[in-house]
Length: 357
Figure 1 (cartoon, rainbow, N blue to C red):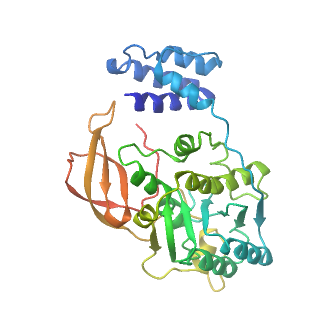
Figure 2: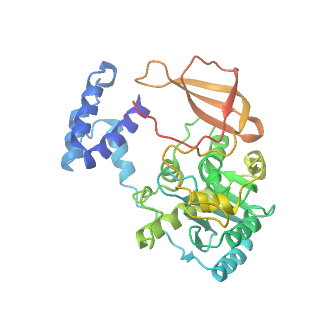
Figure 3: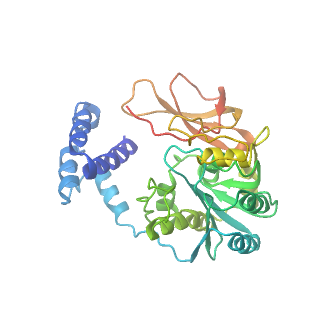
């Protein structure tokens, strides 16, 4: 219940900023469920506080926990960043990144697009933001092959395998030595739920990660200073979390993996087509729509269910954790009956989507 209350309060806070009618409707749905209205829960008091900005129900532990979380200072970018849009700048950035032992990787893309607009690569000392929309395809491809294809350079992501990686395949078909911090967290804290990146930052660094620019127009140029700072921090925070977690060699080996797109990558033509341009000898094709498939292959793995729990306020959904062997563990929402020890097939590279309803 406490986990549901925390998520529900976060959702109500978002609605309080944008849609008071939707806030009132969500509040009525919550109040209609008796199990959620037992003291000390005070949803009405919380809603009033969220609308007015006044103090809320401090005697309600879930509200108090949210208030403490919001009191954490914002995570700040403490290293310089560079925006890379020319061949010479690219060469300098690749040389600098190759001298590091570990780098953080994150991408941003236009809403509904199947291809990245920018790619952020962070060392401990600085962040490079590659403008994939304007760098020559062969230049970006060569740089990615040198960095992502390196077996001696560790690459850090968060949900990288599922969301960022599919959007980089117009340039590169294989990446070595990739560690997703969400999988590392599941290994280090197997009995705890998997938080999102903001939750991980709060747990590990006691800081708040500002995601206000997450859904901004990444395809529009020039990018604002706020967008660039957000993008740089999204990559550099991965290094900060990594250093704070201080995983052992055994932990790293357990979650480190190589990624590969099976089949031939279309390369330059796919790049031009996905960004809505024209290739030599080709015809113009519109950019991917909201419904365009974001998978270039299906990554199916067999795993074993190691824990199951009910999801509050649902009739048929449950959460489960699945051990996928060398691929680590995954936390999933399941719509049917499932039990510990059951073998299941998991589609591992589905791009994350929000659940509604």
